[in-house]
Image 1: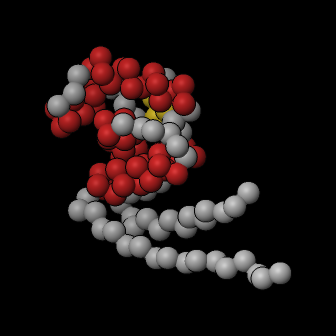
Image 2: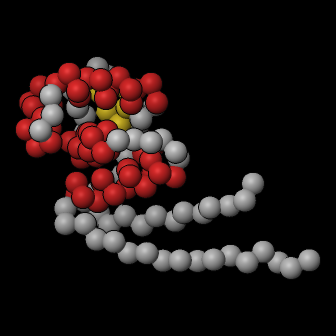
Length: 117
């Protein structure tokens, strides 16, 4: 019996700012976990991860201005993402689940293993 061959591939992609890196990160998480998040949902998750929460009106307004969105749209996305476990409510604030929050001010290195079950 032949030993399993492991393929190692290194990819490097730069982002121009924290938000670009966050969007790439959450896009990869969505793809790998078959979450089927929309572009707007990924933008909201990324924005929230960088801001810390999406609870306050001024933060929501900033998102709406930046991404040409509306409050009802944000509320619908938040509701969906809470059901999925991506957003949580902690101490009265809507935040990203701490399991998937990282510091986007630093370089992000992902080690992804795609294995046969």
